[in-house]
Image 1 (cartoon, rainbow, N blue to C red):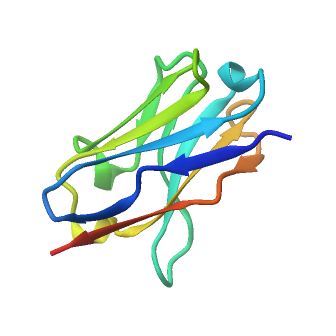
Image 2: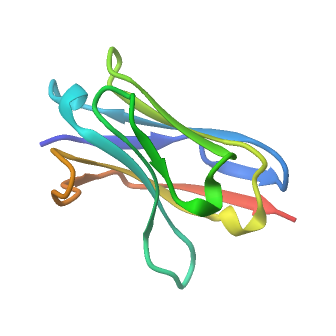
Length: 119
């Protein structure tokens, strides 16, 4: 069973930056599509960014384009989310997840890390 562990969340002022990390166990990390999701209080979990197995293809929700960057290092089984120019509306619990291919269910989830952006 793959385990995903997020870290790097915290409290930051609007305009600040944070970098989230998601460390994965298992030898097949490099074959999986990875994604970052977030869930704000009272809202459903939503996709923020995804990255293919090689790191060459990424996608972002419109609200974070130009501010967030997803990347991965397959040598250490880690995916990152660099978040710049943070806004109060970015406040949420951030989760990483993985799936075997496009269109497949997201099969493994981390426990989440809290990001709070103060105005």
